[in-house]
Image 1 (cartoon, one colour):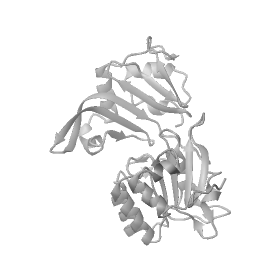
Image 2 (image 1 turned 180 degrees about the vertical axis):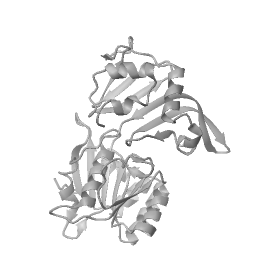
Image 3 (image 1 turned 30 degrees about the vertical axis):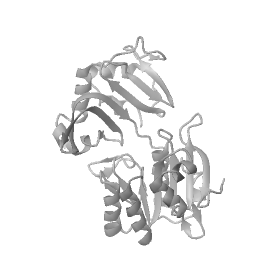
Image 4 (image 1 turned 120 degrees about the horizontal axis):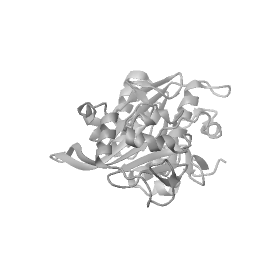
Length: 314
């Protein structure tokens, strides 16, 4: 994110004013949370603060600005360009994709059609999650993901808000562009939530490399199959795997000769091993590299890089 003006346009004037006055570090700003009749909450650099009406960052909620239901509705209308019906497919999944790769999470009363979510009404919470493009953040990781046979199947394991998507994005860029050590590869990206590439009207706002093709706002499993059939990627990249259909699609990609680059929520290799679907992938050594992140005082810190047997590479 370049500066505050990129996000201020998402809010009505009453919320825009305190945000504009606040001393926010745009490079570290992660979330802005709005809840009906609750304090306005900022998450920045891994710590939380409440925001006053004068733009002061507070440790206690007592004097914080309290967000009204009207302000939530106005924010949602602004983001949806006063045509929320056009975003119904995304709203069913609990979020809206925004220009710049940002995402607005939505919570409230769910309307069902049978056993499926039809829409969300009476919205009570909004969470603006900010996308950050950090070029070069994968520099220290990338050399460990190659050997004499080329790029190795890689899984990034990370707790929430520890920079896994930011790292994934930069690795995609570097694999796609290539460099002195390794030639560039055709990369296919399935960006189900428009967070990796930050597509706007199908065009990536983030730099994901010159040899990268993107299936934007597409379910992971279906998108992987579409890319394999249509774009013949050498490397296939997806964020936040975990469903059975994701696993089946990745197994198909392996048979087609694609290299895999994926992320998953977790705290360690043992944590992933304990989950039935993902544990099978570990036991069968589908992935040949594991990059494990933790917070450790800053997002994106590399705790370990392991090979397929769980041995440390650095």
